[in-house]
Image (cartoon, rainbow, N blue to C red; front, side):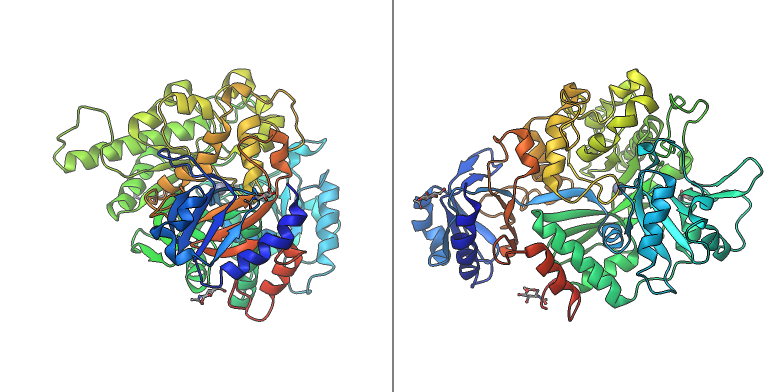
Length: 580
Ligand SMILES: *[C@@H]1O[C@H](CO)[C@@H](O)[C@H](O)[C@H]1NC(C)=O
Ligand SMILES: *[C@@H]1O[C@H](CO)[C@@H](O)[C@H](O)[C@H]1NC(C)=O
Ligand SMILES: *[C@@H]1O[C@H](CO)[C@@H](O)[C@H](O)[C@H]1NC(C)=O
Ligand SMILES: [Zn+2]
């Protein structure tokens, strides 16, 4: 459809219609409700942030839509779906990325250092040079860089450059000097890489990164607010109405609680930060009732824990963060406090360890309750524990998710970003069960929330993930036949991952993820039909509007160069997402 026409008529009408906050009616739309009772509609009405009526244009005459009358907008054929939720992302890391050197397109260690040095020239002299996104798997050398690569160009101020996976970072010698004394031994769950003569190379993996993070000066309140505002605007622009924020620090959660958010944030506490003591929070758009544990590292840095060695690094099997007993103890302790447990597991050994720990704790909890149904092998307690990534699975473990009621929380974008080297790391046999979406669904998994893992190996636009889920291709359309296309999912299944399944995975399926009376008015509108358009068109589809709880948080055309203007506005006076 003609976006220009949409701009002129609809966006303005939408703003006018929103004059009574959260109360409006849309008609002449193509609405996918994801409500099995009534999957398609052309009109809806909302009042005070809740959907009141869904159907054809006549619904707007009904009593249910009485309040919305007079706030009616012709959507001129736009496609509307339940507001999209990213079920696995890192808001404050994205906030950091937006304020750091972009190293994602570096083509070598030297090129990476040059980009960081160029960025440093515009920074106040006392600031650390921080960068994000280098990826040695895309370089000719294929090897990790060392601090000497960076020292050549940034000799006298500290630099901290994060790997695309977030599971490793490179520091230069000036930064190394700030960490004193450098421990002689690796910290638990991390590694200080050393060369043959025992000197640190500057690479810190997983928990070892904390050695540097502890000495980097923290953001001021104003800096944090401004950076979060940028991320919120970016999410709204790309149609996100919710994000599951994986591994939020207590300070992040405090920041969210003080911010007038423009999307729902389902924040997970970090198990490595604090003892399981804090109570649940539900305040406005913020919910805190889950905890994130890490069982291993990532495939890109050979730190994902594998049952057998990596095909391209003989003898290396990655690292488990916990012993079996410690993982079980931590799962149990958080569960006792009523937290939903969500554990990062990428390698097949980590997935097996996590499934085993979940299974034992579920059994112990059932036994403690009297064990009435101990024989059926089902977890009848509605705990909805999640495995984040579930990226590489041993064949024997695929069926255990459905059997235990454990939710695999998956990131289609990882498949797109890793497929160039996954086969080399894993070998042909194990590659068949990498990002095994279809195998998991066929094994009986009913809910498979999808996310991007932005900014690590994924970017904000959910339609890029939708594209990867249905094609198993990169965004440039390669490989043409898709990588292990037998693991693709349908368009509708992929959309469920960002809507109904995301809602279920956060205990909100009774009010989020569908367009039906009694549900929140969280909506995303597109300029074309994302369920029927050619898959390649998903990459150029435009978000026309994003609505959260009835509030229009983004509408294309409201500001012609919305991306820049919105960002500037957020940077301005009060540095928060709205009320400015
Ligand atoms: C619906 O939208 C189309 C544009 O896609 C427009 O041509 C048509 O006039 C609209 N119909 C009504 C009834 O408003
Ligand atoms: C949680 O894990 C840590 C680190 O492995 C361990 O020291 C601690 O004992 C565990 N907690 C419980 C309650 O088992
Ligand atoms: C949040 O922002 C919206 C829109 O800018 C405004 O209507 C609302 O009053 C604000 N809420 C708070 C608590 O500041
Ligand atoms: Zn993540």
